[in-house]
Image (spheres, rainbow, N blue to C red):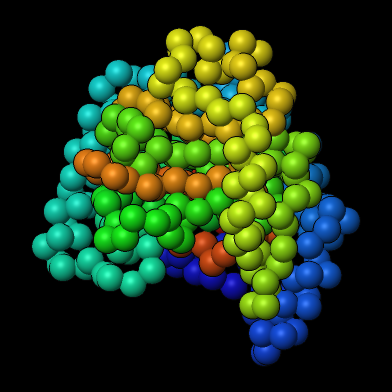
Length: 338
């Protein structure tokens, strides 16, 4: 059982069972056997019950629209000022700059894996009062959106603050390739653009209709030898993507990038999220997606993850006791606090 600042959190049962196997071969066999809807429902049964019992924040029109778009497409777009006041973007930018300065002062840049193009300037956030980051990540409306989309009480897994720059190679690598996230069968990731993101700045790209409820929800879902969901072969995914309509959100009027007026609503399509700073993207990243391919400039972005109890990724966050005391029962369940 994990401990965060002296507070016990409920374990993720799928992750605990995965860790119990000593060999990768047994872990992979276990994960292949568990990669189905029946196992997903069984492991999440208590959180489905909590969803019915716990009082949740009532969503306003913007929140309800996001849930409806997630169900229809696997992705939803919104503006930060639909959830926070107009000055909040600058508060988040200021805290990002502080994290980035600390990152650079301590020479934390690596040259392995995704770090060749992606600086994670802040992770394992400690939730406390008087923090814009804490307010954003623990926004009750975001948790309620995830709950209504998943139809269960989700779990907060963690967050990353990313500064993305051009990679030293021209071909796409790592998360710049089409993939499904490895750690769950249903997720809600919340992305906040802190900078304007155009065609060359590493926009987030999503295949609408590839989430679990979508037309392509069962395609390219393979468990690898280590028990984690593996990246698919790129050629067949690219052929599928190339055959679908492609929409660039930055070329559409704002009112046509959400709801039933969006040209991709309820239809398979490729969505390229070019958008201004202050754009919030909600995405079920079990669906096929890619991003961070920068050919010019940089991209600053915040990402947070809500998963189900089926999650197999180690949570990375901390909660101070004073902060935990003022959380509602619903938000305590989100953080897995006993």
